[in-house]
Image (cartoon, one colour):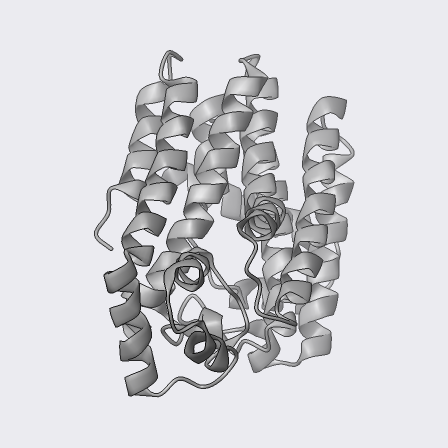
Length: 299
């Protein structure tokens, strides 16, 4: 999409203001993802100077959070490419994340007050979500509510605020688009958690079934733990390197208990609620397609 290149160009212009060559060098090292948040903003607000700048700000915030996240998780890859902390070091990754955050907030301060508040509040939630995520890895979490609260704050809040800010710019129904964005974010994270189990390492760009090894009890594991008879064996594998036999046993138990299938159904239900929120809006067709492409994929 030509407009996504405009967003990338705008990010580069924002970083150039720093007059710091290393920041531009690091920017080139960042692995570009699907730019879901930008696509959402542009579909709601249209392509114009204001929306492109908003996209750039949101993408910089998202990139900064991932730079910090890779340090927290001790990750050496991001989207199948070496992460910045692996290419350089943890200090560089954290400091570059801080530069992106500060530049994003500087540009955000020049925007509509309601837009600035919406996005900045989401960054607070995102940061709290990161902390909750870390805390939840200390022990085997069995609470679905804690998991849902964490993925809302860590992942969905910025997508929700992106949709809400775009609706503010376009003069549309803010509540409808905020609900769409929130549920898009929740479904996105749930599906990402499911794919960690169903996809292989080559497809994922990271080790398969790595969430459980990292201490993340995602929705399939929550449902499995709730239903499985041999809870002790499942808990004994928590935060351990899984052998092929262990991985096969977990997958088998998820099939037997329907934990995996029901996780997919929950993600789809959340996605369909998002579709229903905007179905009567003029630009709903594209938004429906975005959500359907996510929830109707092969798992």
